[in-house]
Amino acid sequence: MKQEYYSSSKSVKEYIAAAKDVNSEPLVNKFKEFLKEGSSVLELGSGPGTDWQILSKGYEVTGSDMSEAFLSHLKAQNPSGNFIELDAATLDTEVKFDGIYSNKVLHHLTDEELVQSVARQAEILNPNGVICHSFWKGEGTEEFKGMFVNSHNKEELKKEFETKFEILSMELYEEFEPNDSIVLIAQKK
Image (cartoon, rainbow, N blue to C red; front, top):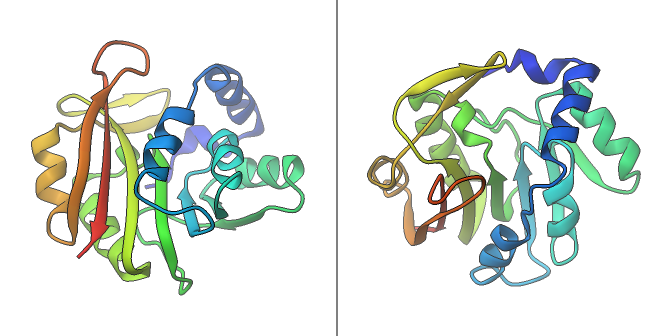
């Protein structure tokens, strides 16, 4: 789903400033419990590049985003990095990965797009590949600054991902408020 908010340099700079204090290291460390260092990882929605930087310390990371403005920022900040334009729903790539990671990206997908993404993730993962995704916990959808946001609960996520993955861990955690977020880690069946 195209997010108009992420299409201008102004809104990208605004997002980078707003997200600068978010610490993603605990999520990446959780991922590292299930995927060995040195593995190839596709990061969906690399945005400002904060998580990409952390992931790159232990993995061979390909960053991705649908926003040309974010891709320009990522390439300027990380000239030796590998970044591709990629829709998180269709995942139109023939490259295979050992892991796929996203931090609050898949909540921009409709329910139908999430089903499509889950199936496609399983296709582009190597055998025993591992995924790690975080979501806002809640019910329903909303529009925030022109962005579609689809909140989820653990039961919904379990239903969507169990078709293609064995869930290894699903926990609530705090990003801004207690238990406002869910991290899901699963392995390709």
